[in-house]
Image (tube, rainbow, N blue to C red):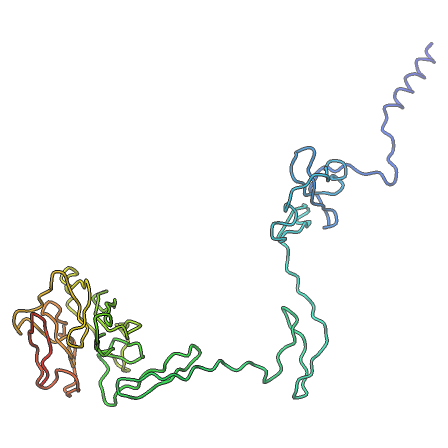
Length: 332
């Protein structure tokens, strides 16, 4: 009886003992993302245990991933910029690295007998010496400057060259750069104010030392003059100071009209600049060309001017007058 019980006990123990694994048996994977090299990883299918899109160890995937189901663009990314890699011993999807492309070692013989090889990134042949494309030729238009000379287009953008400045003119006070590249004392000097009909006139915005304001100009003016506080038409520039009028004192142009061949602005109500000539002052400290109301008088306390008489200015005998409640320059 004891012998029979002992034999039965041995049979039970033998049945419960683990069987030795064969040479090709699969070892269980403790961490489903663990890896040593990229080839340990796989991406695709649905993890049956979590119902999530799978990326991880391919041995785990054999028994736990349903590859008949998939997550679109999960492995490659919408733009195809992902790849599955083993990074820090963990399988994961990472940004695809742009690997350099090796160009073939063939050569191209140039007209001068020299040879060039292929270069990246598209492995095109390098240009032969002298193959550089010639710069685009500018059109042969002419811009007529105020002095009657003409300038053509030049430079990479084919802009008109600056007009030549009159010889002997002091441009240290000329802080306004005109459309043609020349420098003037005020924006109104940058264009010839002429018109034939009301449709020839426009209101444009400029920005001076006191801030933005509006001026009236003919439509032949395409680009407003630009004010530079620390630049001028000379190597040494004057220091600009001004007494700025309150914004509500500046005229608000509601429209324009052509009157006696000149563009003027219409304000509503009509702005009265002056009652007498004493209400008007020169429009700039040095070599003024016109007159402005006294509330817009420039501050000339720190400005030094040359004593020469410049043509087209109020120098040497010119004065300010009041005509139809507008300040005007009276030339000598």
